[in-house]
Image 1 (tube, rainbow, N blue to C red):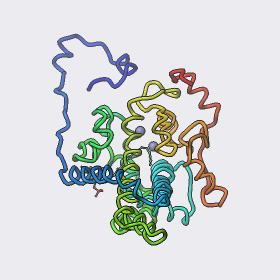
Image 2: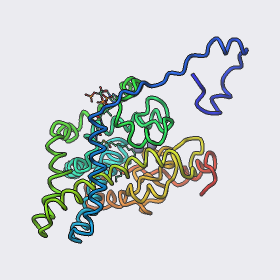
Image 3: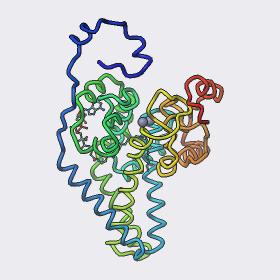
Image 4: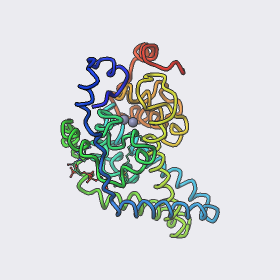
Length: 319
Ligand code: ST9
Ligand code: ZN
Ligand code: ZN
């Protein structure tokens, strides 16, 4: 197997050229099995979203505001819910908040909490290898959306089997959301955002569906995928220069505080996913508000001393 980084390369015992040539294995290329149903649905979604852009000037200003508010609602279901609560256990939440986050998560339609968290744990443990569901070494397109259009690499399944998901199985709300995912997803991702503008300010069904449901959903997906693509390929690495994940400001903004990806991969259980707490981080603001309401507790934060020492030891000196 090829060494993954320079440090590992140095640790390899030196061998004669012939011995090395004899032991060279053919590179195992993943066979691409395209899932055409996903290709067609994703293409339709993106064409629908482009068409929705032409409807924005014809829509009610309250529909614009509603789409933005609903974007945040759904995004927090991913960031505060699937990501920081369930995938990383970076804080704890009482049942009412977990119920709310499960509904918000369905509004984002990024697969159920269980599947999302399972893939994400495997992503962290096996980053940039074949076992990483959205391995950025396979290029920008694969990391962004391509991984959802093909069957998974066998390593994802094999290595994923070795991880512990008992906490997810034990969470009744996660299991309930998984069981009723289809009706919940249809209701919260498509029906609610469409019906509210029609009922409350007389928006047309057509405009409400395309702008508040289709366009809002499509932008949310691309913002999330940008963490896997842009933030795994470009940006500064103040915490660990040896890994791919980077700090990417444009992703920070669209992904409501999730673009501090070099910090996040260095300190994955930090509930703020960033050194800077509330700074450009709506998700952290939301979790802190939930703390003041008694719904969130036991938030894990990396001590500043540890962060500074790590920056000096492995950072690229960029901040
Ligand atoms: C979407 C997800 O968009 C986006 C996630 C992005 C993650 C980003 C993370 C970045 C950080 C956070 C930032 C948040 C920012 C938010 C900003 C918001 C504004 N381990 O999956 P299957 C096994 S979804 C262990 O079907 P296939 C398991 O036995 C978009 N085992 O694989 C499983 O069976 P079961 C909408 C695993 O058949 C079996 O394999 N949805 C693992 O290869 C089959 O699993 C879509 O587009 C594992 N990790 O199919 C649909 N994985 O489940 C997308 C699998 O019964 N999905 N196993 O236990 C699919 O259609 C399919 O999954 C597939 C692969 C075709 C992609
Ligand atoms: Zn993570
Ligand atoms: Zn990552």
